[in-house]
Length: 336
Ligand code: UFG
Image (cartoon, protein in one colour):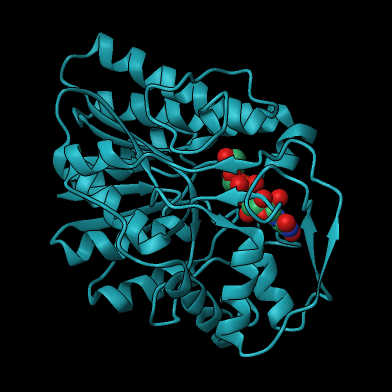
């Protein structure tokens, strides 16, 4: 299939482009490069061994998306485009609603105008109103989520459901990501955060590289085995393969699936895995909890296994080793 990846020059998009190519599909990237680089797409193409066309443009403009669809004979769209920083979304909520909601609506409109009916959406575990262990897809989802970023994901899920109800031809998948980490094992593509990373693994990578003094562990008094927060860390290649499986399993209507491993890792376990990859201890200190953080968030991934014949196979240690390889080879990310 010829697949348009909106926001496809980013961390998850580039890895998904490689996975699509490995499964015989033809990825085309549409990205405004506001938080991604052309070099990432070039490297993904080199790994995949094929040309990956890059259309530089705004997925919030239905005419731009429509042109990309027409020019490249697109048959399916994976919609990654959007802003993704939780803290920033609290400070700039309107930008999050405009960009995230606007790009989802514009993309769906452009698809409808061009008769494209396969759609996969990047959602998040953040849509669950009550975080916890072994979250199932039928757990309550709502907009009472504490931050505008999460709300945009829940709202777009509702928009996709409404679009599918109105158009029986639409075949959609909503994929709720847990915590994507890792990098391609080649060390050629990986996560390239702008400024100070918000997320644990990219921050630790910079501590390991000596660019940041010390990891701040946000609380060790949670009701978890070692007192630190527990998350379901999933290797980005497993996540990427989940998108390919979802694309190939689409049926009329909306399929909703968690993409997670089902296993929890604590902040201290991630720190230890990183220390093992690096070969020495890493500076860290315990500080108060970060407002809004849950004690635990892990998936029940059984629905994805049943419906997509997919499951995550890579370990936390592999993901951390791949992150460290990427970080060492690309200390300045894609800036060279
Ligand atoms: N943590 C630290 N120190 C840091 C960064 C994180 O101790 O410097 C801890 C957090 O408290 C948490 C764990 O590491 O326990 C993971 O934190 P991340 O920021 O890496 O990930 P979150 O689970 O908070 O965030 C993820 C996604 C968001 C999504 C959110 C809620 O990155 O997009 O889950 O589902 F909104």
